[in-house]
Length: 230
Image (cartoon, rainbow, N blue to C red):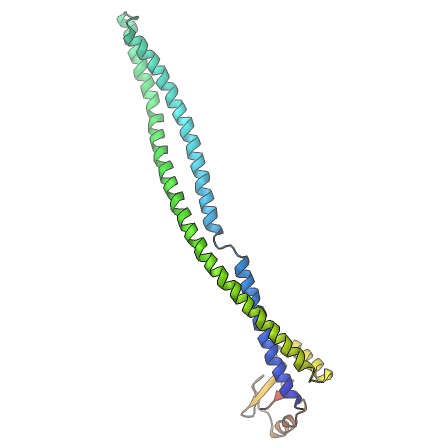
């Protein structure tokens, strides 16, 4: 039994499991995210602005209408024939002119508000069309992510099954040692290539390499990882 080789295989599976778990976590995060939230907030903001503009227009129009009613009443008196005094007629005309002067700013503001309302309505329409297009693209991407999630889940299940089978071949004491070094160093097993420990980059003596080839766990004298020679 070549324990270092088995532990190296275990390490490769563990690394693949970690990668699969990280991939699953990333895909789940993507699925849980709402990339269209900013667009929805922007549309909600435009709709709130539109409500405010419409409210202002109603109030402004009401003010203008009030002046229009007063102007109409004065004009009715002016042209009814009931008032014949030049002084009174002149006074009525001055009142009418004064009321029209007061009404003018409200009429101008109403026109500005109507323009702003139209612009905002167009912006909402454009934003909602864009949002719908993005929703459709997001749904397509969601389906891809769900397929990717299933694939990663299947891969993870397969890896965990392989790990369980491999563990049955390794002495428990060796597994315990592997787990302890893994916790300390990140990777518990280091390949030896060209007489170099790939875990720390330190040269391994011929004697240590000979011991490592025996199939028993031999530790790098520098980093303490288990040495593995193919």
